[in-house]
Image 1 (cartoon, rainbow, N blue to C red):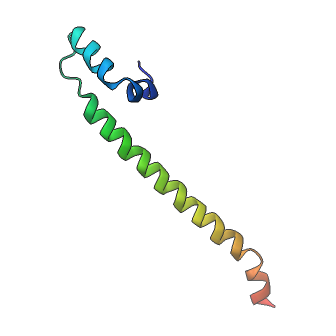
Image 2: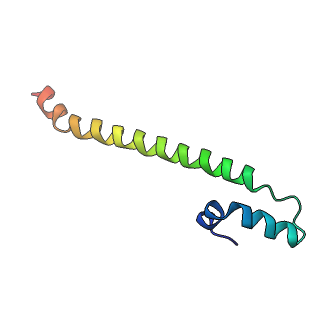
Length: 68
């Protein structure tokens, strides 16, 4: 199995070698597009987690202060 970073860096080579070996249904462009979408979603998730953590941190101690 090839590492995704290798495929990103050598897309044309990977596609050419796949065709040479008879794997004619390999679409490296589609793979890289899917990988880019996945990476964008991971970034969005990480940003949301950071926001959640910031809100959680800002709320620490508020329950104690409100109940007094």
